[in-house]
Length: 404
Image 1 (cartoon, rainbow, N blue to C red):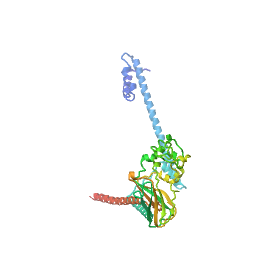
Image 2 (cartoon, rainbow, N blue to C red):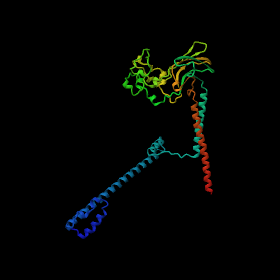
Image 3 (tube, rainbow, N blue to C red):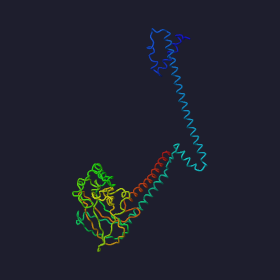
Image 4 (cartoon, rainbow, N blue to C red):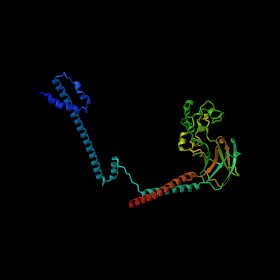
């Protein structure tokens, strides 16, 4: 059946123009596809072909839209079904044993989050209670610190205590010190927290491995060989070490090991009070630090607990480290401290102290921690008071505005 030219013109041209925006590549420049020399039959076939393509594209778009709508409806139904199942599970578990736990899991799975809205009363109450608790803890620390008995003696500025000499310093205990009495050395202006200093050690070597220079060059720089330590360095057996061999232990921390020593005597007697170097290092360090098979080539005994204590760098330039423990009571009276002074500190304006101290449940004397608790507690209480003042002032202004 043929279509008249006039009818085909009436239906084809508007359709083509109306769908050019959908697919311009298929329907633009129709006149370019046909020429004036084409017969009416050819023009008619071309227009029928274009109309057919437009209808097919419209049908395809409609089918895609229908599919998308169907998928959305399926997803909505699935979500509604899941919510209904959760509500049914909640209702079923309200009276059953363990229902609260199951409801909690369901709430967590569905994104339930408890968001309390603080009120002025609860906020102020929390701040005040927190402040009181912190201040009470600060008072407890202060009381416990005041019960600790401690004596501190500076000796680097003593004219009798020159480097390389042995000197005696007299001191008096006004009160008895009950065991255990801890012996510390304190240093000032010594920065163990420098990054290069902290990195300058070999953990593999400290575990007992005998390493080559190549193995330690990145860890122990600049102290890698025996010649980098001291001239004429000797080993643990007293023989001079080869300057070109690897230093064991190597690194800056080991080279700067504190080597002063102390003895305590009761004045008027020759009895020397034993200062033990056992159980002063961390248990993990006791497992980690091991001597090598070539121990006679080592210049330090890495299993010495005083060495282990030194190898844990201090955070601040003013620090104290444990040197030993006296496992007996020290009666009050006069004593003599014998110091073998080997560690120089004059080059960097350092200071050295000898300390005797008792300990309690919180350790040694620590007023700094008590001060921190007082500060935080005071800030919390002041914040609570400011909250109350601000709340009353704001409400007063709001009431005045409403009256006006």
